[in-house]
Length: 166
Image: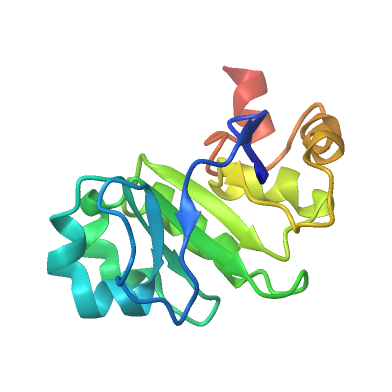
């Protein structure tokens, strides 16, 4: 079983991430699933009627604006990083938290490495499914790499100079 980092702890994964080419055939009604955006587009009505938890995942070339008015249906929004160097979804997580006020889980999936975790958390991610060959117990130490941050972000809305004068 895969382990993920969620809210600063390593936990067992309970959600089923469906592949990009998945269909609804054979998917149990009560399982918690994270579906690709294309499957949501084609079967939103059937997915909303399920008993299990529902999440959606977006590839790096898919925009959150496409489902911004449907966020209440998703307990998890997973954002795929196809390569370590592709950081487009950092902005997506920030938009989810700041512009759209999304309170559910925002999960980083794909080529996610320890070096990204501290910055991704600042953008609004609260869960991380690391690359399969990486140890989540080692990666969780990334949150201790810095004791203070200067810039404002999703996890700290005030910059350091404002916090110091308050």
